[in-house]
Image 1 (tube, helix red, strand yellow):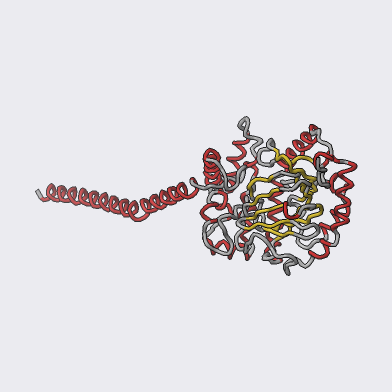
Image 2 (cartoon, rainbow, N blue to C red; image 1 turned 180 degrees about the vertical axis):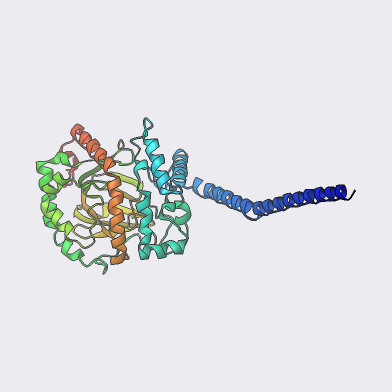
Length: 405
């Protein structure tokens, strides 16, 4: 009996141990689920719901309408944000593989969004000023802006404003719609204003000898839509391509621009021509890290050429620099009967230090390089449009008041 009884006792002890181990595993699994997995899932769900509630109702769409986007385009913008949410949160190597696969799908190889350089955009965070600004608004990576712009733009800080909605936002930079005339940040203003006559003469010479070079503005987002009444002579196109033929037509102007401290030669640079009665609809620029400079070279009716930047409104005065941050939603009108022409270029924001720019310039160059294919396509489409344009110079460059009848 003793051996049999001992055998039964051993079996009973083994079963109890197994049940005890199983119970321990269940308790551990439950603890993990309730202590980590469920809270993490709940947090992710909370973030997704908040993302939907905040970004789905965003009134902004930089593609066409600025702050006046209709419902259909708000939906498109939200879908684009969802795409950015996915791409921005995929590890870099996996993202490159995914993008490579997507480009092999017919019809997707020409999608410019697939060429965007997420890595270099996020790398700008290494600049000290940018890092401090990101921490102040709770931004972990710059690419968060691509899918949470409404969230960040509505945070109250000296770096944000609900009307400040650039394509590429960079935190840590104090923003304001306009800069005062002859502001201390730009000591070169008086020198450039003194060159107004020389710059105007070069533009007028081009308008006489090669008027077709001044073409109707082609919206870069779709490369199909034009803005009637707005013509441009690009020295650098919207994606950053150097328009060397045009630069050679205005050599003194290009030399002056390159002498300006902080001039950004890879940002859109042009002569902007606005015809009588024309309007440039609500839109925002590429980045808040740049300050947009207008040198008005032909403004025959100052009170009738108007620009709104965010909540502020100004007019141009011939030969007087107008400096503003075009990251704000802005809009332009020519209510007059004569043409307004300005030289249009960017300089780096004065809040950026030398150390910041060492980081930013390298990443910025790489971001611009990633737009190379799109820049070439834009150039081809612009030339095709110019070739089809039958307007004569006298149709768009009106510098005299119409004769009364």
